[in-house]
Amino acid sequence: MKNTNLMKSIIVYALLLFGSAVMLVPFAWMLSTSLKESFQVFSVPVKWIPSPIKWDNYITTFLGLPFGKWLGNTIFITLLNIFGTLVSCTVVAYGFARFRAKSKNALFIVMLSTMMLPSSVTMIPVFYLFQSLGWMNTFYPLIVPAFFGHAFFIFLLRQFFMSIPMEMEEAAKIDGASTLGILWRVILPLTVPALITVAIFQFNGVWNDFMGPLLYLNKPELYTLALGINFFKSQNDVQWNYLMTASIVTMLPSLIFYFVGQKYFVESITLTGSKG
Image (cartoon, rainbow, N blue to C red; front, side, top):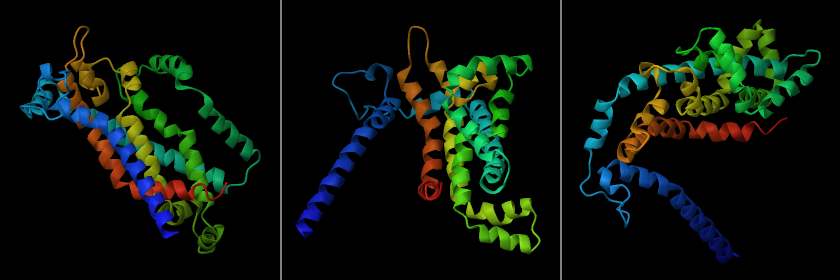
Protein backbone atom coordinates (compact mmCIF):
# COMPACT_ATOMS: atom_id res chain seq x y z
CA MET A 1 0.00 0.00 0.00
CA LYS A 2 2.80 2.40 0.91
CA ASN A 3 4.60 1.63 -2.36
CA THR A 4 1.41 2.35 -4.31
CA ASN A 5 0.90 5.70 -2.60
CA LEU A 6 4.55 6.56 -3.14
CA MET A 7 4.29 5.74 -6.84
CA LYS A 8 1.15 7.88 -7.16
CA SER A 9 2.91 10.80 -5.47
CA ILE A 10 5.91 10.44 -7.77
CA ILE A 11 3.69 10.43 -10.86
CA VAL A 12 1.70 13.45 -9.64
CA TYR A 13 4.82 15.48 -8.86
CA ALA A 14 6.41 14.47 -12.15
CA LEU A 15 3.34 15.68 -14.05
CA LEU A 16 3.32 18.93 -12.08
CA LEU A 17 7.00 19.53 -12.78
CA PHE A 18 6.49 18.79 -16.48
CA GLY A 19 3.51 21.14 -16.67
CA SER A 20 5.41 23.87 -14.84
CA ALA A 21 8.36 23.50 -17.19
CA VAL A 22 6.10 23.80 -20.23
CA MET A 23 4.44 26.91 -18.81
CA LEU A 24 7.83 28.50 -18.07
CA VAL A 25 9.19 28.06 -21.61
CA PRO A 26 7.58 31.27 -22.97
CA PHE A 27 8.89 33.24 -20.00
CA ALA A 28 12.38 31.79 -20.49
CA TRP A 29 12.30 32.75 -24.18
CA MET A 30 11.14 36.27 -23.28
CA LEU A 31 13.92 36.69 -20.73
CA SER A 32 16.50 35.31 -23.15
CA THR A 33 15.29 37.57 -25.96
CA SER A 34 15.48 40.64 -23.74
CA LEU A 35 19.22 40.08 -23.39
CA LYS A 36 20.02 39.49 -27.07
CA GLU A 37 21.08 41.54 -30.04
CA SER A 38 18.35 42.06 -32.63
CA PHE A 39 19.92 39.65 -35.15
CA GLN A 40 20.08 36.87 -32.54
CA VAL A 41 16.37 36.81 -31.72
CA PHE A 42 15.32 34.32 -34.41
CA SER A 43 18.63 32.56 -34.91
CA VAL A 44 18.53 28.83 -35.69
CA PRO A 45 19.18 26.86 -33.57
CA VAL A 46 17.70 28.90 -30.73
CA LYS A 47 20.29 30.31 -28.33
CA TRP A 48 18.74 30.23 -24.90
CA ILE A 49 21.81 31.81 -23.32
CA PRO A 50 22.69 35.01 -25.20
CA SER A 51 26.27 35.63 -26.18
CA PRO A 52 27.12 38.33 -25.35
CA ILE A 53 24.52 39.17 -22.70
CA LYS A 54 23.16 42.65 -23.46
CA TRP A 55 22.19 44.18 -20.13
CA ASP A 56 22.29 47.50 -21.97
CA ASN A 57 18.92 46.63 -23.50
CA TYR A 58 17.22 47.53 -20.22
CA ILE A 59 19.03 50.88 -20.03
CA THR A 60 18.20 51.66 -23.66
CA THR A 61 14.56 50.80 -23.09
CA PHE A 62 14.22 53.14 -20.13
CA LEU A 63 16.21 56.01 -21.63
CA GLY A 64 14.81 55.77 -25.15
CA LEU A 65 11.17 56.21 -24.12
CA PRO A 66 9.39 58.08 -21.29
CA PHE A 67 9.04 54.90 -19.24
CA GLY A 68 9.04 56.76 -15.96
CA LYS A 69 6.05 58.86 -17.01
CA TRP A 70 4.15 55.82 -18.27
CA LEU A 71 4.95 53.94 -15.07
CA GLY A 72 3.60 56.82 -12.99
CA ASN A 73 0.41 56.96 -15.07
CA THR A 74 -0.10 53.22 -14.69
CA ILE A 75 0.45 53.27 -10.93
CA PHE A 76 -1.93 56.22 -10.50
CA ILE A 77 -4.72 54.59 -12.53
CA THR A 78 -4.22 51.19 -10.89
CA LEU A 79 -4.26 52.45 -7.30
CA LEU A 80 -7.42 54.51 -7.83
CA ASN A 81 -9.09 51.54 -9.53
CA ILE A 82 -8.25 49.27 -6.60
CA PHE A 83 -9.51 51.83 -4.10
CA GLY A 84 -12.74 52.48 -6.01
CA THR A 85 -13.42 48.79 -6.53
CA LEU A 86 -12.85 47.88 -2.89
CA VAL A 87 -15.09 50.68 -1.60
CA SER A 88 -17.98 50.21 -4.03
CA CYS A 89 -17.99 46.42 -4.12
CA THR A 90 -17.66 46.07 -0.35
CA VAL A 91 -20.66 48.31 0.37
CA VAL A 92 -22.89 46.68 -2.26
CA ALA A 93 -21.85 43.14 -1.33
CA TYR A 94 -22.54 43.80 2.36
CA GLY A 95 -25.99 45.07 1.46
CA PHE A 96 -26.78 41.96 -0.56
CA ALA A 97 -25.42 39.69 2.17
CA ARG A 98 -27.04 41.23 5.25
CA PHE A 99 -29.88 43.64 4.47
CA ARG A 100 -33.47 42.53 4.05
CA ALA A 101 -35.21 44.23 1.14
CA LYS A 102 -37.99 43.47 -1.26
CA SER A 103 -36.82 41.85 -4.51
CA LYS A 104 -33.24 41.75 -3.22
CA ASN A 105 -32.59 38.34 -4.78
CA ALA A 106 -34.07 39.47 -8.09
CA LEU A 107 -31.77 42.49 -8.13
CA PHE A 108 -28.84 40.26 -7.32
CA ILE A 109 -29.67 38.01 -10.29
CA VAL A 110 -29.95 41.05 -12.56
CA MET A 111 -26.55 42.23 -11.38
CA LEU A 112 -25.01 38.80 -12.03
CA SER A 113 -26.56 38.73 -15.49
CA THR A 114 -24.42 41.72 -16.46
CA MET A 115 -21.42 39.37 -16.35
CA MET A 116 -22.81 37.66 -19.45
CA LEU A 117 -22.45 40.83 -21.53
CA PRO A 118 -19.14 40.81 -23.44
CA SER A 119 -17.17 44.02 -23.15
CA SER A 120 -17.15 44.30 -26.94
CA VAL A 121 -20.95 44.78 -26.87
CA THR A 122 -20.83 47.77 -24.50
CA MET A 123 -17.60 49.24 -25.86
CA ILE A 124 -19.16 51.60 -28.43
CA PRO A 125 -22.00 52.96 -26.21
CA VAL A 126 -19.59 53.53 -23.32
CA PHE A 127 -17.12 55.24 -25.68
CA TYR A 128 -19.79 57.66 -26.92
CA LEU A 129 -20.88 58.31 -23.34
CA PHE A 130 -17.39 59.31 -22.22
CA GLN A 131 -16.87 61.29 -25.40
CA SER A 132 -20.05 63.28 -24.79
CA LEU A 133 -18.81 64.03 -21.26
CA GLY A 134 -15.58 65.45 -22.68
CA TRP A 135 -13.44 62.82 -20.99
CA MET A 136 -11.29 61.92 -23.99
CA ASN A 137 -7.55 62.16 -23.28
CA THR A 138 -8.18 62.08 -19.56
CA PHE A 139 -7.89 59.31 -16.99
CA TYR A 140 -11.56 59.56 -15.99
CA PRO A 141 -12.84 56.78 -18.32
CA LEU A 142 -10.21 54.45 -16.85
CA ILE A 143 -10.91 55.32 -13.19
CA VAL A 144 -14.54 56.38 -12.64
CA PRO A 145 -16.18 53.02 -13.63
CA ALA A 146 -14.33 51.33 -10.76
CA PHE A 147 -16.36 53.39 -8.27
CA PHE A 148 -19.60 51.83 -9.56
CA GLY A 149 -18.77 48.23 -8.64
CA HIS A 150 -18.02 45.04 -10.51
CA ALA A 151 -20.48 42.14 -10.57
CA PHE A 152 -17.91 39.37 -10.06
CA PHE A 153 -16.21 41.10 -7.13
CA ILE A 154 -19.56 41.87 -5.51
CA PHE A 155 -20.50 38.20 -5.81
CA LEU A 156 -17.15 37.13 -4.35
CA LEU A 157 -17.40 39.46 -1.36
CA ARG A 158 -21.06 38.61 -0.76
CA GLN A 159 -20.20 34.93 -0.50
CA PHE A 160 -17.44 35.75 1.98
CA PHE A 161 -19.72 37.98 4.08
CA MET A 162 -22.34 35.23 4.28
CA SER A 163 -19.76 32.88 5.81
CA ILE A 164 -19.32 35.25 8.79
CA PRO A 165 -21.65 34.37 11.73
CA MET A 166 -24.50 36.80 12.32
CA GLU A 167 -23.92 36.56 16.07
CA MET A 168 -20.85 38.79 15.77
CA GLU A 169 -22.88 41.59 14.21
CA GLU A 170 -25.69 41.17 16.74
CA ALA A 171 -23.21 41.51 19.59
CA ALA A 172 -21.85 44.70 18.00
CA LYS A 173 -25.40 46.08 17.70
CA ILE A 174 -25.99 45.43 21.38
CA ASP A 175 -22.86 47.44 22.12
CA GLY A 176 -24.34 50.34 20.14
CA ALA A 177 -22.39 50.03 16.89
CA SER A 178 -23.94 51.52 13.75
CA THR A 179 -24.18 49.70 10.43
CA LEU A 180 -21.06 51.41 9.08
CA GLY A 181 -19.33 50.78 12.40
CA ILE A 182 -20.10 47.07 12.18
CA LEU A 183 -18.83 46.95 8.60
CA TRP A 184 -15.65 48.83 9.43
CA ARG A 185 -14.76 47.33 12.82
CA VAL A 186 -16.20 43.81 12.66
CA ILE A 187 -16.66 42.67 9.07
CA LEU A 188 -13.70 44.19 7.22
CA PRO A 189 -11.00 42.84 9.58
CA LEU A 190 -12.40 39.35 8.95
CA THR A 191 -12.60 39.94 5.20
CA VAL A 192 -8.94 40.71 4.53
CA PRO A 193 -8.35 37.57 2.40
CA ALA A 194 -11.31 38.37 0.14
CA LEU A 195 -10.31 42.04 -0.15
CA ILE A 196 -6.76 41.10 -1.10
CA THR A 197 -8.13 38.68 -3.69
CA VAL A 198 -10.25 41.44 -5.22
CA ALA A 199 -7.22 43.75 -5.17
CA ILE A 200 -5.10 41.13 -6.98
CA PHE A 201 -7.71 40.59 -9.69
CA GLN A 202 -8.24 44.31 -10.16
CA PHE A 203 -4.52 45.04 -10.15
CA ASN A 204 -3.82 42.51 -12.89
CA GLY A 205 -6.78 43.66 -14.95
CA VAL A 206 -5.93 47.36 -14.82
CA TRP A 207 -2.14 47.06 -14.92
CA ASN A 208 -2.26 44.97 -18.10
CA ASP A 209 -5.22 46.75 -19.69
CA PHE A 210 -4.50 47.69 -23.28
CA MET A 211 -7.89 48.34 -24.85
CA GLY A 212 -9.02 51.03 -22.40
CA PRO A 213 -5.97 53.31 -22.79
CA LEU A 214 -5.99 52.66 -26.54
CA LEU A 215 -9.56 53.98 -26.81
CA TYR A 216 -9.35 57.00 -24.55
CA LEU A 217 -5.72 58.16 -24.55
CA ASN A 218 -4.21 59.69 -27.69
CA LYS A 219 -1.41 61.74 -26.16
CA PRO A 220 1.89 59.88 -25.55
CA GLU A 221 2.43 61.64 -22.22
CA LEU A 222 -0.80 60.04 -20.94
CA TYR A 223 0.05 56.49 -22.03
CA THR A 224 0.21 53.55 -19.67
CA LEU A 225 2.91 50.87 -19.81
CA ALA A 226 0.71 48.39 -21.67
CA LEU A 227 0.10 50.96 -24.41
CA GLY A 228 3.54 52.53 -24.40
CA ILE A 229 5.49 49.34 -25.10
CA ASN A 230 3.86 49.23 -28.53
CA PHE A 231 6.29 51.97 -29.57
CA PHE A 232 8.70 49.10 -30.18
CA LYS A 233 6.41 47.95 -32.99
CA SER A 234 6.29 49.61 -36.37
CA GLN A 235 4.57 48.84 -39.65
CA ASN A 236 7.58 47.05 -41.07
CA ASP A 237 9.61 45.97 -38.08
CA VAL A 238 9.39 44.86 -34.45
CA GLN A 239 12.27 45.43 -32.04
CA TRP A 240 11.76 42.14 -30.27
CA ASN A 241 14.65 42.44 -27.82
CA TYR A 242 13.46 45.84 -26.55
CA LEU A 243 9.83 44.74 -26.63
CA MET A 244 10.63 41.72 -24.44
CA THR A 245 12.68 43.92 -22.11
CA ALA A 246 9.74 46.29 -21.62
CA SER A 247 7.34 43.35 -21.25
CA ILE A 248 9.39 41.80 -18.45
CA VAL A 249 9.58 45.08 -16.56
CA THR A 250 5.82 45.53 -17.00
CA MET A 251 5.07 41.98 -15.88
CA LEU A 252 7.20 41.95 -12.71
CA PRO A 253 4.81 43.99 -10.48
CA SER A 254 1.96 41.58 -11.27
CA LEU A 255 4.10 38.59 -10.30
CA ILE A 256 5.30 40.23 -7.11
CA PHE A 257 1.78 41.33 -6.12
CA TYR A 258 0.41 37.84 -6.72
CA PHE A 259 3.11 35.98 -4.77
CA VAL A 260 2.83 38.39 -1.85
CA GLY A 261 -0.94 37.86 -1.65
CA GLN A 262 -1.02 34.21 -2.72
CA LYS A 263 -1.78 32.95 0.79
CA TYR A 264 -4.83 35.20 1.12
CA PHE A 265 -5.89 34.47 -2.45
CA VAL A 266 -6.13 30.72 -1.84
CA GLU A 267 -7.84 31.24 1.54
CA SER A 268 -10.47 33.51 -0.01
CA ILE A 269 -11.28 31.18 -2.90
CA THR A 270 -11.66 28.32 -0.41
CA LEU A 271 -13.95 30.16 1.99
CA THR A 272 -16.21 31.91 -0.53
CA GLY A 273 -17.56 28.55 -1.68
CA SER A 274 -18.51 27.46 1.82
CA LYS A 275 -21.92 29.12 1.78
CA GLY A 276 -24.25 30.16 -1.04
